[in-house]
Length: 464
Image (cartoon, rainbow, N blue to C red; front, side, top):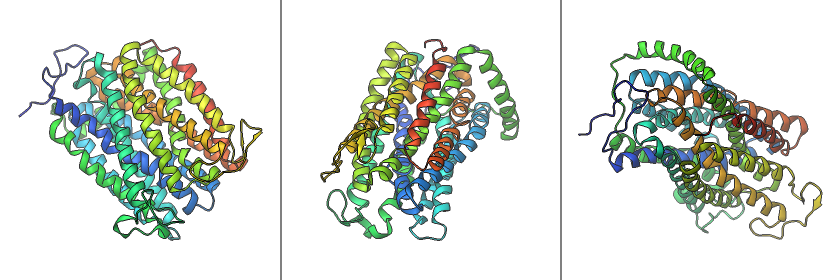
C-alpha cells in the first residue's frame, strides 16, 4: 500500500514522492474529465441555451436571469473557497472535501431534470440547481488543484496543469457527442444529430434531451472520479481536528490575504486573475445563450459548435502547457487575454444580418451555420476554445510556482477567491447591460473592459 505524500523537512516546498506511479497522476488528471460535462453540457452548450430559449420568457430575460444565477454562485464561492482551502491545509487530506463537494454536485445536477417546460417551479429549480452545482464543482477543484505540488516538481507544473485541462476538454467533447448523437433531439424533426430516435424514450416536445444533461453529468462524475480516490495518494493527516482547523482556517484566510498583499507579484497576480477569470466565466456562461438568442441556434447547431470548440480547446490546452514550461506562465496568460479581447470585439460586431457592425449580409442559405454572421461567430468561438484552456492552466501553474508548496491549499483557495470574489460582477454587468439596453450585444462590450483591465494588471507580475 502506498504511503501518503508528506512534506520535506522544514523548507518552503513539498517534495513529490520519488516514485509517484503513473496511475496516481492519471487519477488526478481524470478529475478534470469527470467534472467537465457539467461545464460543457449544463453551463454552456445544452442546458443554458435551453433555459434561455424555452424556460425563460424570452432570450434577453434568459440571459439576464442566468447571469444573476452565475453572479450568486460566484458570491458564495468568494466566501467558501479560501476558508475551506485553509481548513484543508490544516487537516491535510483533500479527498474527503472533494467527496463532499461531489455529493452536492450530483444532487444538484439531478435536480435539473425537474426543470420542465411549463412547470410551476421550473425556472427557480433550474437556476438554484445550476448555482449550487457550480459552487460544488468549483470548490472541489480548489482541493484538486492544491494537490499539484505534491505530484510533480515545479518544472512540470505547466505540463501537468495543461494536460489536465486538455483531458477535461476531451471529456466534454465525448459527453457532448453522446448527448447530441443519442439523447437530445431537434425540436422539429424529433431526431438526434445522428438521425436516431432519442434513447430511453426521451421526449423532444418536453425537452427531455436537454434536461437529461443534469443527471448525465452527475453519473459521469461519479464514474470517472473513482480513479482519483483509488490511485492518487492523499496528503498526510496532520492530527488537527475539524473545529480547530476551521478556527485556524479563518485566521489563515486573513493572514494569506495579508501575505499576498506584501508579496507584490502574488497580490498583483491574484488581482489580475480576479478580473480576467471573471470575464472568462461570463464568456462561457453566455456563449451558447448568445448563439441561441441572436441566431436562433437549436440543439444541433449548439452541439456541433460545442464539439468543434472543445476540439480546439483540447489542442490549445496541450500546446499551452508546453509553451508555459518553455517560456513561462506570464506570456501565455498575456497572449490569451489579448486574443480574447479581440474575439469579444468581433462578437460585438456581429448580428443576425450583418458583420463588422455595418456590413449587411444575405440571410441564411440553409444548413448548419448558413449565414456569414453565423460562420463568423463559429470561427470566433473556436478561437475562444483554443486560448481559454491555456489561460486557465497557466493561471494555476503560475500560482503553484509563486507560493510555498506546503501552503498550496490556502493559496489555491485564495486563487479561487480572486477568481470568484467578483465573479458575480461580470455576469451581473452583462445581465444588467442586457436588460438596460434590451440587446444581447451588450454582453461582449462589457467583457472587453474586463479583459483589458486584467491584461494591464498582469503586466506587473514577475515572469514565472
